[in-house]
Image (cartoon, rainbow, N blue to C red; front, side, top):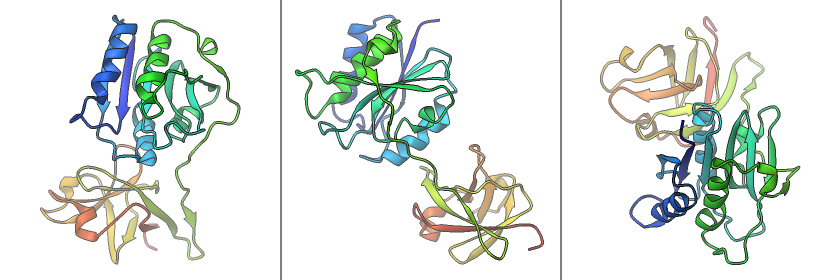
Length: 251
C-alpha cells in the first residue's frame, strides 16, 4: 500500500495555499497518496479542527500521516509538533488540534525545529508539509525533533449531574446541516431540554415530520439536535456552548 498523507486545514480552496502544500508533498514524497479531508474548517477555529481530528484519525490505516493546519498562532512562540500515536502520525501546531491522538495511550510528541528560511505566516508549507513527507517516507519521528513532554491538550467539556438527577451538558459543535452536537451520551428512551423545548430521543432524522425538531444519537455517539430537512441551529438559535439537559425516562 502506498503511504497516505491526509490534509485538514482552514485554508479554503479559493487561494493557492493548499496547492503549495501539495507541491511540497509531491516533490518530497512523490509516491505518497494525498487525501483531502477538508479545507473548510472555519478560519482559526481550533476547536472545530480538534473535533474533526477525533472523528477520523483512527479510521485510516496504520502508518497514515495526518497533517492538521489550523494555526492562528503561526509564527509565534507556540511549538510545532509531530506526534506518534496508535501506529499513526500527526503533524500540526501545538494548540490542541492534535489532542485526540495525544490523549491516546502510548502517544509521543516531538517539537519540530523551525527553519530560518520558513515563512512566519506559512508553517503549513515550510514546517508541517516537509515533516509529513519525512514521516510518510520512513523517517523516524525521533529524528525530526526533540521530545515535547507538555503539549497543549484540549478536552471536550464534561457534562455534570444536577441535584435533581438530570445531566447538564452543552452544544460542542454545529455541523454544516445545522445539527447541534452535544457532549451528552445517552440511551434512547430519555428526553432532552434545550432552548425551552423538551423532546424524546429518537433513532433517526426521519422519525420526525418535515420541519420537526428531533433529538437523536448521532454517529459520534453524542446526543444531537436536528431539524428534519432543515437547520436546528438556525431554527432554535443554538450556538456552541448552548445548554442542553438530559432527563432519564420517567423523570
